[in-house]
Amino acid sequence: MAHWLYKSEPSTWSWDQQVAAGEKGTSWDGVRNHQAKQNLMAMRLGDQGFFYHSNEGKAVVGIVEVIREYYPDHTDETGKFGMVDVKAVKPLPRPVTLEAIKAEERLAKMILVTNSRLSVQPVTDEEWDIVCRMGGL
Image (cartoon, rainbow, N blue to C red; front, side, top):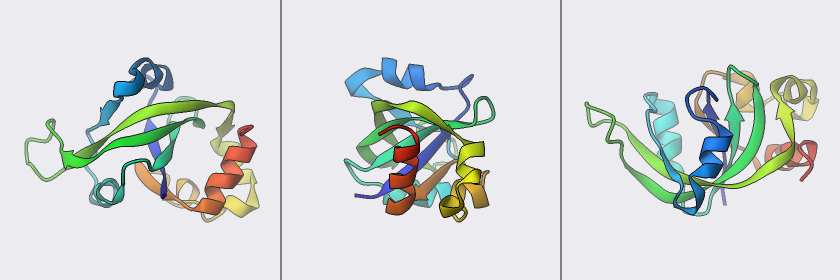
């Protein structure tokens, strides 16, 4: 299983809204970056990812799971981009802030630290374990 990180501004789509979507989950649409598109295309059913509040809060707040693999994004008029569907799995007992991630030297190469603008990014198994422990899991 691969691991990912999904960034969303809480004022646009928050963890609470993701949780409220329930088992049916929601589409992760609106991605317009080719590197992020490649990440979405690589996702498989059951892959899990961190739900990260960007700009407001700047913290990993929960875990989501891919429930539908890559398909065309209905919001893309060009037809070049796609999306996956995800559902909330569980919140982190303690949100893990960007500040805490940057302070953990074992996470220095995490894409969230090195390429903070990428909206959908892979997370290594080691990074996943460290952030989960930091978040109380």
